[in-house]
Image (cartoon, rainbow, N blue to C red):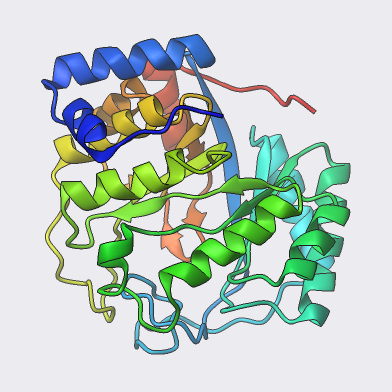
Length: 315
């Protein structure tokens, strides 16, 4: 059983001087990972737009007019071709995202075919499909899925201010099904939605104190999409963002801390600071579902300037 963290202790870590916090996070990071290597993932939207959920940050919600074109589920050969391109560019994990509240069983079968074919390429696989039933999680495991992404987004207390079409407990139920099926959990949240630092700490505590903390923790920076309720939200303080990355590394030493959405609006210096604080994974490619992401050439140059290398395939 991993150590249980309480709020006061986590808050004290978060509130240290920044040099002390970074030092602690970097120390933990070096015990568990190569500090000079970054894991590269690619995320592909296999079904875009028309989602019935009302997540306040999401351009794919049917509740908001964001100008996003609704697209059907991709064909299998299109996904395989995209996975081959991702592998050639240096990705070791290929993630599939679909804008559903929950997948229908017939759609899940096609996704399972996609997972099986991507696995044959030697890539780790991850999908994010919304809420799952117990048998659906088991079916994905049978297909060879490695990770299931299902973010809790924020603290339980703040969650209802962001989403009302599903509950926080709905999220936790799906995570329980994923864990019971023997899948690895990919779960994190979004910073900059109006939440406080205490909310950010509580979100990380909930994950760190699970019986098995997630091995993949995406930390997203809100992309303020015109047409969504959060389009005019104030920017998250960059130092608070770095502090949250550092706390995630300290609370979940063996997790890949993923610097996820919002990198297009981050300076090279802020991204470098996040790597120093313990982030060791990024999404690669010009699109992150529907949002802009730094082009691969820009990421390659950034990693080169910092002196970081891409993690090699381990399968």
